[in-house]
Amino acid sequence: MSAIRFDRVVKRFGDFEALSGVSFDVEPGDFFALLGPNGAGKTTLISILGGLTQASGGNVAVMGHDVASDYRAARRAVGIVPQELVFDPFFTVRETLAFQSGYFGLKKNDAWIDEILASLGLTSKANANMRSLSGGMKRRVMVAQALVHRPPVIVLDEPTAGVDVELRQTLWAFIQRLNADGHTIVLTTHYLEEAEALCNRIAMLKQGRLLALEEKSALMNRGKARSLTLRLRPAELPEALRSLQVAQRDDQFELKLSEPDALTDILVALKDAGISISDIEVAKPDLEDIFVSMMRDAPQVD
Image (cartoon, rainbow, N blue to C red; front, side, top):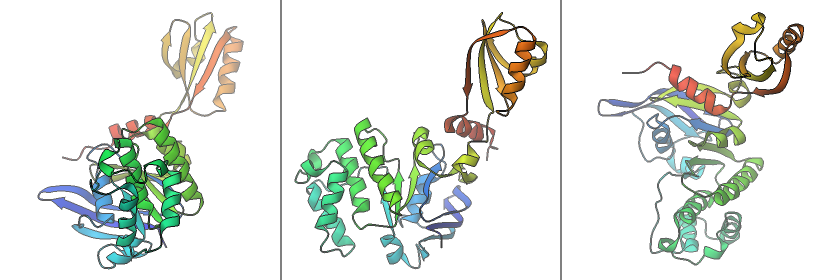
């Protein structure tokens, strides 16, 4: 059974089609990244998952529970941290979490609330009124609300947008612990270095269509090739290597490196030509490189 199943999901707003038959599964225990530019349909997909909007077509299920026909069980199975800061200005932090617990019928949840507060650095703010908190502290409370009923699936929609480094580190340490304990995590973020560091599977959306769904290791082998930067004495490239040249600046040459084994042939060619190397650097493409390349090369939908 999949943790989340999106099956041919369509969402229309009038004549505009925000999602065009999106299908993919998130497996139990995944740390899953859902990436795409603004307007790609990520938040719309999450809103359907959380029951905030209805799909125009297709089906969505959480832990085997259809979000439309079995909505009570589906809501219990997922905790969602939205992009927007939504809170009751008259509640304290602890009251906010106690109210959220009551929404799910949890009467004796104080020990877990205390653990969440400690893990997110909120213990000192437990009795503070929500309206008195900074934006970063409010964001922490939003995360705590999503976790208060211990859902097996946790969805984080841009959780670190505009927050400080301390919160990011605290949040990711806690979320990684939850993932290690068996929780399924779905993350949307524009900080692609976060997705690259944390996630094991990645989906990419553009204009409401699925462009990629792969293990991170497989996706990282797509996109532009590795590059090799050399500082050479004398500053010239043998004829045999000029087809690999990407750029030159003074004595620095950038070459395409299609496979790691090709490095041996390049070094041999330089040695045979009597050219010495004063510096060398091999650069692998990162997720941002691959993301930008895939978004650029994807066909535009009118």
